[in-house]
Length: 65
Image (cartoon, rainbow, N blue to C red; front, side):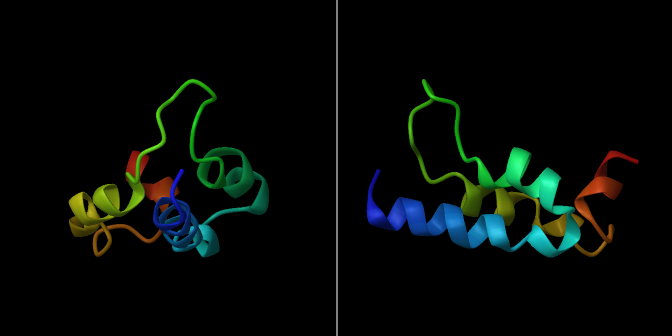
């Protein structure tokens, strides 16, 4: 993993931290990959692709409603 990739994962993980409980954040957001999954910088891409949802919902939990 490159330094740039790691920093991007950390930056974008912490952008959603305030909307979640610590246990949910640590288990599902902070952990960036499964052991056999290739390491790629995907968080920024997903954040940009789904940015239109930010104004419609107040938290990640509300996206399922």
